[in-house]
Length: 518
Ligand SMILES: Nc1ncnc2c1ncn2[C@@H]1O[C@H](COP(=O)(O)OP(=O)(O)O)[C@@H](O)[C@H]1O
Ligand SMILES: [Mg+2]
Image 1 (cartoon, rainbow, N blue to C red):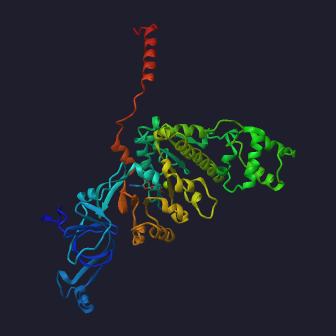
Image 2: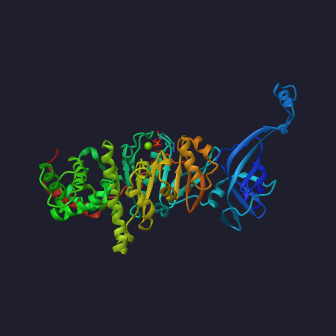
Image 3: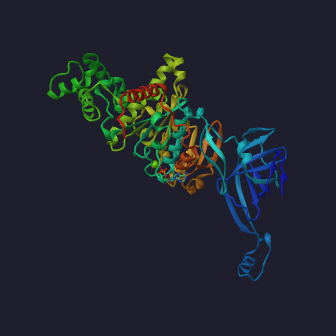
């Protein structure tokens, strides 16, 4: 039977009716054989408006006396269909009235009908976006596509979930689409575990190298082939904060003095001089000299040779051209990982800032950048020294630089930064401390702590303000399925210069005498 709901849409059978409301909380009784799940979104039609609510609790009980229950359990007596019931609590998060969507201004009436969401609701909730993350979960069904917009990138994001919850897969899905949207968008990805190139733990194994645009739109940098080097002569004192987050102002002043005195070779020369026990030709306190020289001596020769080339320059050039840079820092000491990450991220981010300030027209042509940072808690912990990433999260929105902080330990992300992450993808998290942090500091999530513990692999809650203001239950698309669906449609053809080169080569070959096969 089809019922015409008051919201003006055709609905399938209701799943239950409202039996009580209080503030933004609604209780409803569920019909027999209805499938519901924690976190599911339901719709409640109420006169001239309809409400959307998330299921946060459920309770099943009997209307019978204990003695009657015992007799029914033994099969001695049957009390009919009304002897047991299931009551569900849901929290209102949205109201639709006269075609307008907003936060709830009131609550539903007793006996209003409750429906599970359908494709139409999915479009009313405006869940789809430029970058598709997955599909809306409604009990055991997957409905319409759910995604975020490109404009959400500079509004900062976070991906949270314990090991095995599906973070790497979600990173792949998102970055694959940033590659698809190049040169409007570009990604800078730090891969600490060396998984993203090949998709090591994804089953079946698929990584960014399997993306059809990998060869034209992605550049891979790895510490393993010895090419990821930062020449000492490319390091100015301005970069010392990225390399040594605990550097003090007197050491910084000394560094500038040395730089003025020795020029770009300042690190090598002062290191040599100091090692020989000679006096640095710059006046400074002995303790300051020692502290700075100790820092400079800790830069390893393999990663920081005495040259004037740096892979960071290549990263910057590529990012500006819309070529995604995948930086694999697996295998490095954690100290060096941090240095490489902070140094390259600050060069790229500061370039965006500089262009915005000095050359606005050229800045407008730059692709919107998303920096994916795994192990984000190591860089954003309030107990550690500040890094460039908290600056990026707090102030780089206007330069169109976005941060995607990926971590299994959200509670270690400093609160100021966490509050700036307007898009959150929350996956299964078991640690209570982390669940509490997530629910307490995310709108409309205060009742979802249990739900976060019960999510399955690839299941997530997505919030992307201002577009998606509430936690949407989604199933993230599996990256191998995404690749299969996407196909190889736009393998780029070689550009015309390569083609003409090829044809001259062919012509040359033709002109040469071809030996007869006969
Ligand atoms: N959305 C999904 N659908 C199906 N399988 C998934 C999904 N997300 C992840 N998986 C699988 O679960 C496993 C763990 O996923 P992964 O992304 O590596 O988790 P994490 O990075 O959080 O440790 C992988 O084998 C992956 O293929
Ligand atoms: Mg992972």
